[in-house]
Image 1 (spheres, one colour):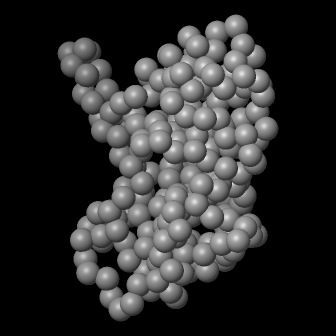
Image 2 (cartoon, rainbow, N blue to C red):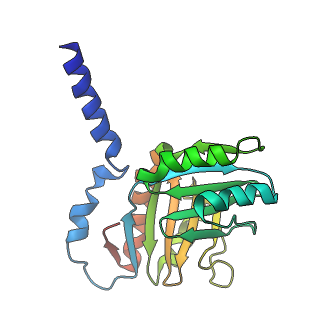
Length: 214
């Protein structure tokens, strides 16, 4: 009886953890509805991803270890990101990056990084459970974001493969521009995701908003 109760509790916990942080907003149902009027901004909840906080020195041995595991060059230029398929490495600071991988790859990637970086002054920390991502884009996306942050988002200053940390409607976040359509991913603490979505949505209505699949 105790074992069965524990199995049921574990199953319920697994279902809860598999839900995105915006599940209460029923975005999938809203995405299926036709957009009303002209759309200047689209928004979506990105699928959950594995996330690793990666820290290490500015030296060739560290860069080689990362390249061997991920096939990615370590972005050394401030506020830049490199993407290869489903793996992304975003600059956070001179010795810190955010690595995003599919959830199915997280454990293996973390293990391989720890093996390759053994003996180096480096850190590999799983931070995926505490993060969420909101996708947004469209011709008025920069206008929407300018309401939320003081970052200079003019195309001459912030373009594809750029990323930057800032406050977005007072929520700490990491903005990554994916392409010049433009499209962005906004990575935020999971506990603030619903608040920030609601805030952005309220402003986006002014520009014509479409909810889309992530």
